[in-house]
Length: 488
Image (cartoon, rainbow, N blue to C red; front, side, top):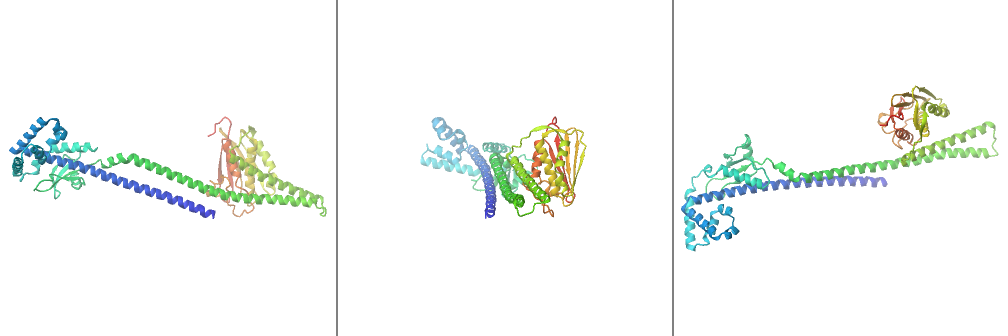
């Protein structure tokens, strides 16, 4: 039930993260699309304004070419001088200069009679339309004015002013082009940014003003870049935190399973020696059983051995507790490592001899005095020798060697055991991890020894390296630096 709940939680977290990413991507795409539409709208509005102002300027020029128009402009000048601030409040001088003829007539007609105004408008329209037919587009457009209007409108809308432009006929043929680089004519013809010129012409062919706006993407990213960068950064943080959280959850689950196995194994390991000691004590106290000297020695040896076994189990648990608390305090003293190795080998000789094994010493270090904790270094050697005996499917052959260099002393403990597969070698120093032992069914432990070995070596400023292959034994190379050499 707990496993299913954990799986459901992880699935829910993954679905939530994927949903969040999808929503963010959808939002970003929608935002970019809206920004692009806004950009297109801004450019088209600028082109519309250019087209409108060109048409107004042309109408003003046409007015100046006819008697009626000149009279209209003269009347407006008179009104501007007479009314002064009132005219400026209603329309700026630039607006009057670019006002369409109808607006001008309306403004001037406020001081005319009805019949006079109708006659004036009729005369004005006849004069303008008399010259409209037959005028070519090249004659109607002033390139300098067009370039100036385009530059002004583009800059007012936050765009580049020097944009390539061209005027095309309705069938897509170029009529007038700016001084653009070669190869832009085809791009201009396909440009989505275009606006019709002289929209109010009563006759004549259609012509369109096309422009290229090369800064479209740059403008979009300039406006949206900071927001998108912040959104992407936050999304990345969420993804990384999620992955980290998922790893912690999986690690905690794995650790919980391992600790459950540890408790089961520890319970079994403790019950066996306790039961054996209890049986031996009952046998010694039972008056009905004969107690020869040989039986007494056997029971005593059994109690002693099982007591040592219990001590070793408690020591492993205590070592684990020290590592958990992070309170491994070293009591450094000057040690002769060779003497320490010989003492440990002598104490372990009975354990090795029971398997008909042998320990070979090859102590060649020229400098073998180090500053270290005697108890922890002793336990380190006991752990390595104990593993060499337990994880061996034949008579154990253990070789302990030392060498020294300018930085410290190398201690190597090699055996002829079952070896460790390459895929497992990075895990053997993890706490509570046990390598599968294959056919060695009597090898028991808690996965604490090698993690303790690495912790002791690292607290001494050293490092440990493993060389092993299945069926060819293992070799642990431990480097302990001299006191004057700073640890790396």
